[in-house]
Length: 257
Length: 257
Ligand SMILES: Nc1ncnc2c1ncn2[C@@H]1O[C@H](COP(=O)(O)OP(=O)(O)OP(=O)(O)O)[C@@H](O)[C@H]1O
Ligand SMILES: [Mg+2]
Image (cartoon, rainbow over all chains, first blue to last red):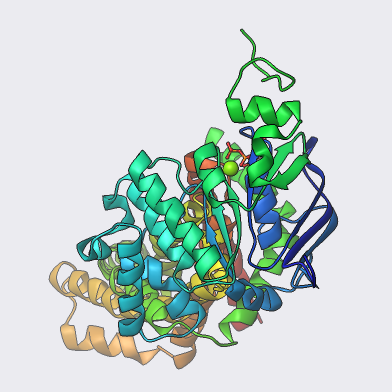
């Protein structure tokens, strides 16, 4: 991995009040690489993505994108920086006052000033890539199922062919076949179109398919980062327990009977 | 008692947020005057505020004018000054009642819906999604609403002036038996441009405040449906209080010699 990393996190700390969520995260992602973050529910995976996007502001550490520091960036510079990004939110976060196609075309029309007719064509094309018919484009998000909303959000994230794409649980809520279609689409974005991807998933099949490298977040730190192929013999008992989904092991769920 | 406590608490909370509010207002205004502009959204807000508030504002105005004619007639007849009814109606309506009552009605209608809409966008991460699509939420959500409030509430108040005077006229002619021509002459006789202008100034300030409160409380709402509900209540209460306070200040500036 030569040259400036596309994204680099150094010693990132983020807390909410007393609760420490990120406690010194270090990660470097090369241009065109696809990294998947795994980890238990509530460990701060989404918080990590939002910190890179500047939606949340870490108290300490450094985050650079193409060598440019993003923590504390001015809003004008951030708007410009965001042109590089596409983000799929865990909860879809579709604009419910706009039609489906307008959601998908939003970044093209508002962010990049494209004409509506042309943006609509691209939106319809992206919708078909996530398995949605043109007729779905004229519906409102509230008229779609959860999995359909997720796919619309995915189409919106990739509509402008961004350099960097974040996927927060892209296959959650999809049937296995559609999940595989979506995995294929993510692979296409990175391998064929050269985008840099950072994804979060609980679905190990999906992680194996889309990741070049896998990183595991536990107790505010990335306790293991390695090539996707080696995840099965990582030699890390936390990773082993997680990928096999065992209740017994070093990771103890804070449950009370 | 409970109601007063609620109002008092909201008012204290409001004071403690004055710093944040000022910063919000400053940022918002700076985005009103700098491109890119969103004419479609501005138009939508203007229609929402100006057109759809007409029935409720008109109804408020006509009954206010009517009751004012009745009250001043019964009061003034005690010292044989019934002839002043038309003058009292037109001055009270244009200077005070149209702007304040229309302002309060619009605060209930528009301020609440702005807070609910923007608040829902906040808690469902739609505002975060906006920023990742290179669209500044201040420009896209706040600026059009502020501008629309500033422009459309004076329009509503102008309409309310006319309808309010008309209400007084109806009661004056059909119930109190005034001569139509002399009632109208009395209406115009002592009316000065400043009476109307001061009312419209108030309206512009109120319109700005209503939108500001709706956007501010919506923008900073948190915690799901309950948070949005609180934001909605706070936007109406704080807008109503600010309308009353600023009404006094503007009156003192215009007529307080
Ligand atoms: N805005 C916020 N305010 C306060 N606490 C927050 C906020 N956002 C996240 N948290 C806390 O940070 C922790 C990590 O949240 P995060 O959403 O990153 O989890 P996650 O790893 O994405 O989990 P999941 O896999 O369930 O989506 C949680 O304990 C959550 O309570
Ligand atoms: Mg998450």
